[in-house]
Image (tube, rainbow, N blue to C red; front, side, top):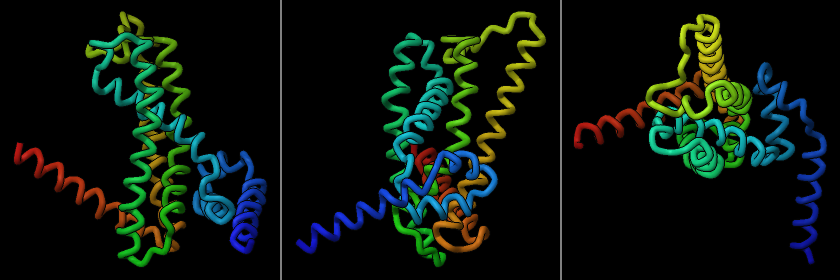
Length: 220
């Protein structure tokens, strides 16, 4: 039938677009985010979504577990199970929720991105988070359960170990800041507007979130 042929044609186009992409996207997104995300959304906006969701979600879960000092009450295997399940789940929910807001607010400012294009932008701007999984692996190898406790890892009298830990912390900060840069630039590209409008989009969202949080704290 006509509908089945249309569906088959669309699927073939997506498959062809996906094949045109390559693992180099993981590298080019760092320095050429606008060009890279344009190639991705034009070919297949869902490209590598689940892979990035898994790894970026793991990082998000590990960070949350550390900030909440879950190690004070939960064993290391329990914490890892928590991050493996809830981390990616929370990340996916966040991408869909924030993505809908970015699409709407960006649309008010003249943006034209579809919902799945915005999700692709948020997904690929999380590549620095995926890279930070290597830092977390080092943390786990060196300190294990201690990085999730309120006491923190024991450094003893080792100046070199303290310096190494400081360097890893700086690296995580740099990766987080670069994620912000990529988020703004990919948002601008998928919405087909300027960096300034992308900054305006995020400023509105962050400002609205701050007002909501402030109101909740004030009313509590």
